[in-house]
Image (cartoon, rainbow, N blue to C red; front, side):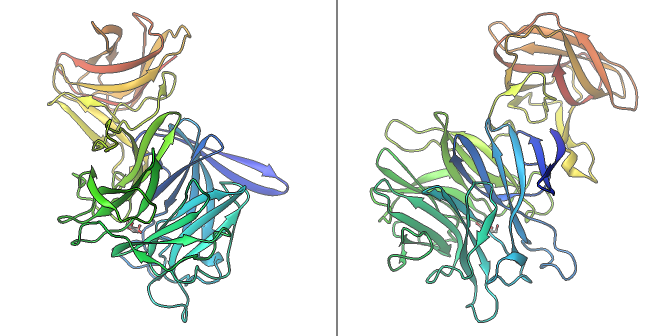
Length: 446
Ligand code: FUB
């Protein structure tokens, strides 16, 4: 992961912009959950919840704790810009700022304005449970101005808003089951009585509605506790408010045991993507989650192929980036382990540990462009000394470099000349030759 911070002086204000580069999870400078991805003006914008750890007097220990929202954007799904806080519980007039419950949001554009929807508990007198508010901006990254009151008639969480082809807007939300209503053109008031959406499994919590339309089919996606923890499912209809028909599982329950999941689906540059979350950066506490993305594919009949979560995620990685092969696309059955670089600061990311002769990882979609790269650099450490063989996948695979990692306790950058120079986009295979144990942080071409 590449992460650096740039401070800009703008009209006397210091505006802080973080540039992040990541595979899965996508965001590595904070916890993020419940991703609502949107395509605005040719860029992908990501509106997630912002999980933090509760501290005494600030949130409930052992539970979800969120005080604000950030927005992120990307032109290539690999490099993400953190635009900073857009809405905070202390800046919304109606929100009870002692609750730290700024749960799953959404954002949509209408007539050049951006409407950011978010659930939160209201101050005393505002009703029990969650209400849903709106903040309005002139740009997808804000600034957003919160409305003084939440939307009348909605009690629930996880708002999702869609505008149909005829211009009618709909809002969906959850309260154990899924609900929906028409929205007025001002995007701030209901234009119909809320209805409980029909056609979903009767048993088990359902939340996180996210609707999209493709070729006349309305796909309602949602997390559902069919057994013990949430999995992602979808149902279809030919109208935005249903009735829907259960259509299948989008993504199975996480193997990590993360209790929640939450999704959004977008088409970007002719490819469909599923955004979701897991507990990658906090494997022992699943209320501190991290967003991910993987490609999504439709069958000929319009049904969706189940998405298998990957670490590699999406996007093309430049060969000159620090390529984190721990976000692998495939690996040998034995001899490769992925571990945190620093267990005391998991935001530093992971390392790949090879300790069987012949063990390997494959990292897909590295762009070599048409520049004549000359060297491979590997940030590595080896208690035994060892040799890494780097090949480009093909028929047959082509050896790109062979690098000796010296014996030692410290991380250092080993360099080697390229034996062949790849062009275009290639899948990389990194393999331990012979015995030994080698830890790799990243590889990069120069
Ligand atoms: O992030 C808090 C809640 O967890 C969301 O609102 C739900 O969808 C679940 O992900």
